[in-house]
Length: 399
Length: 235
Image (cartoon, each protein chain N blue to C red):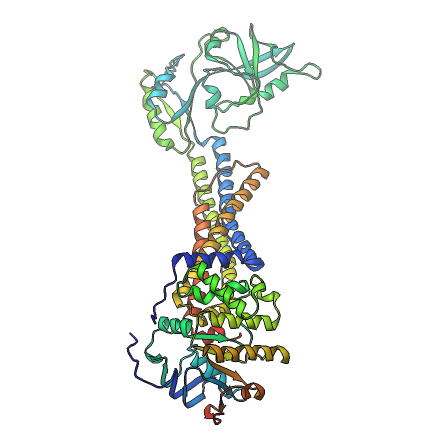
């Protein structure tokens, strides 16, 4: 008689398979507990992340990625500023720059059907639309081909002011500035008030920069507006843009305002959100972990007698351990995978309902799935191993 | 490993076995200086009042519990020198257990319950199912092979448990009140089955009972009283 008996691997797999196949209602409940624990971690972390992204978007729309350049003249004499700048050269010299546009400003009356309103007339290069985040409601914005045309794009509030009940300002109407009629090719959406901008788009009429000469003898560039790709160091971009612009100017210096206060605000806010996320993640990890722990502890302690019976029939400690290991691995893996899917679905639904953009949080899946696996495995195996170390008679004893 | 095969008589030999428990700071002596020898093919009843220590004696005989002192040789193996794995292997190959409360695994079919001990000695699935089916036939339950224990009557469950005890071809069957949860008619059937096995296959039978009618049908009667063992004269 040999005293070494080996349980073949296929036999072991069969054992675990039979055991799982016959799991029954109790282990469906165990699975449910694991799924809830895992999905709550995934969903909470992801929802928090989406909230942070959405809040950061608000700051970005306020213009944290926007630089406004002014051109004070050197010395005390007021020298005329250039009428055009080579913006493409600046674009090439400054990496990370996404939009650049120049503004020429004039304040004066705009007339439509005899009604006159004071407005900003803004000579713009086509890049202004992107730089100022102008959104067209009807028609289109000025294009490079419109340089010599008497076209105009009007701000929402100004369009309303010029229109009258029964005679609204429409696309294709003409408005008069001094002696020139400008054909409206676009009407802008109402824009939120932009703190950084030298002009408010709502009260402005945008016309091609070259056309400014028609209504004003010597137009000068007042500002250059620059937008950078998100997440870049604005100070650095401001320095590069300063150098590139200065190279084109003789009598004027370049003064670029960085929206430092807003950037600071955004940094602080994103730090606040990071802490919030950390707390959300920790709480849901603990909550989900306790759920998984309870389920696995219950599962094993209910089967203490089974462990005793199996030992009486000749199972060795490692047989017991392997059986529970395989079961715990399968149960928690299936549970964690379902939880990940469910959690992501919940986060997506929540983002959809609250109108946020859905973004995948990098940490959500590894944290949710990983913690579930760890907790599930530990509390699935640890009690089984400690039970398998008992004398069989103690495992068999009725509680 | 197990070189200690000194020519001790019989299958089971206990000498000076003692078992004590710590309970609420008090030491309780359950068994005291038990000496016992059981030969192959014997049928023994272990009798005694509840709390006398007879179940503890059975657990020690079945290697489910370890005594505190004394000498125990099982089929030539010194139990005190054996590792847990070796004890598990002896249980698997030499001992078949029949419990009062059947102790079938509720999630497995009767067939899988019976095949379970074979899986712990590396018998292939196919072969162990075949042997298990043969064993269920022997106890008259072949047509219930795929029922779960919950769908079987008490007598049928105990038959499944006996089939499970027998499937590994053990040299001894240890039964703890095997008829305790059964009506008298079914109990009679189960006893007949166990005694037939003892007679026909020379399986050593050790039965814990407090029922004198059962004890009467066994060759030897071992009385346990306050942790002390007495043999009540052979028939």
